[in-house]
Image (cartoon, rainbow, N blue to C red; front, side, top):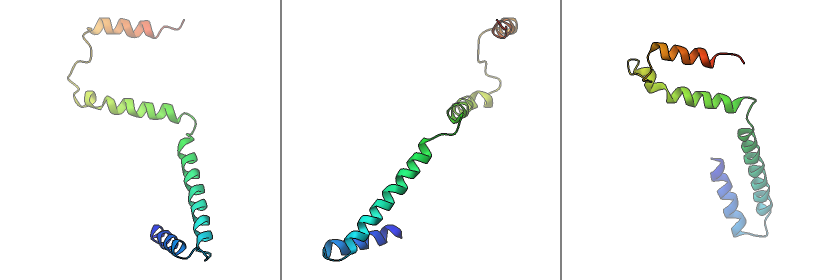
Length: 93
């Protein structure tokens, strides 16, 4: 309904340029612009570690099909090869 009111003020301002409707419209546009800029700032400034959290959620969602199909092999290595890979990657150097 606010946009309908702004449209009414815009119509009144265009029909009678001598009225104070034009200044009201300019003020409303400045307020709207400031509000939209504030929203854009709020959405674009992420909380600490937000990017990493979003990436983790995307990774989990991408793996959802594999989780639903628990019997499908993800790799061609056998148990011992997989165990060796895990042990090798977990060594602290």
